Amino acid sequence: MTSLTRVNTIDSRSASQLRVSQRRSYGTRLTRAGRIPRLARMFQWPLRRNDFVRFSSAGVFVILAIISIHSSTAPAQESQNKSPNRAPSLRRAGASNSELTRARTDVIQKMKETRAGAEKLLKLHEAERVRLLEQYEQRREQYYSGLIARTDVLQAEHALAEAMLVVDEDKRWLAETDMALTEYTMRDELLRLPGLAVGGYSESGSFMRFNGGSPWALMDVSKIEKFFSRTFGRALPISAFGQTATHDRLRFDHRNAIDVALHPDSKEGQSLLGYLRQAGIPFIAFRNAVAGSATGAHIHIGKPSPRS
Image (cartoon, rainbow, N blue to C red; front, side):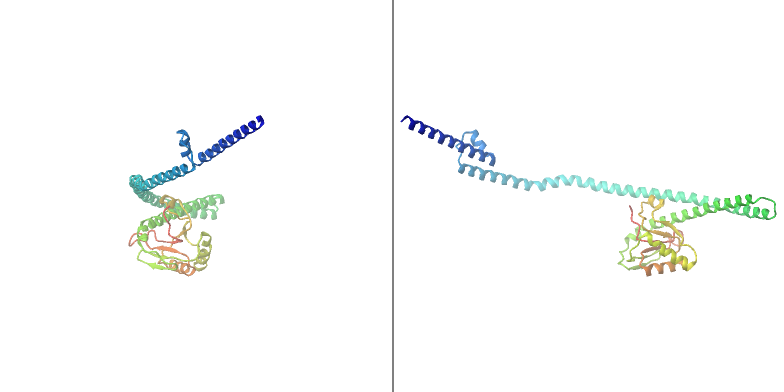
């Protein structure tokens, strides 16, 4: 009898422990599932699965309501956040554009002033070249007469060669500046024109345009040079090969273009333009920057120079 009582007691204790462990595990699962069961245990509510379903449904409803309210108010808040910032950004863009235009205007003015000084300097260098040429011819005659040594003639010849290089460099710089100023001055007029289709050509009183469809790179310049030298017996007068300091000052991207110091209406210019059109190479031929003036006339080979 005592043994049976002990067994029953053990069985009842085991069953009780089993029920407790089940409740704990069930409560743990509910606790992991959400926060509602935690509140139930806090206030010692009887924890049943149906209650959890009701609590969960109510929680989901509340969450959906909060999301809907937030989604309805978010666009208004976003528009309120963006509207005050939009005007300053537009003002900053306008200010930067005006500053860039003002900076380029200052660069143009300085370049014109520098060009005027370089033109005066060119006259002085040309006068020096003439003087050294006369000195060289005089010393050469003296050498043939046996009055001076050969080294004296060589010195005069070297000084004359250096003076000629200086004059050529002055002329090259002036031509490059004039061409860049021409492109800058006529840029707005070019931008107002409609774009050309591939292979399209247009001509006006100031310039001619051709949108060639052939691939173009600076490595193709050698083909143009061979054509020109074979046709006219002299080198192609390239005044700007790729990017130059002048284009840097104007913020022009001239890396994939060359400027040729030829008037497009001259015989050499017309022959070169005919070759470029036949080869499908794009170009812009500038007749002049100012009506009645040939200053800045040249042939720009390559795509138009965008502003960087």
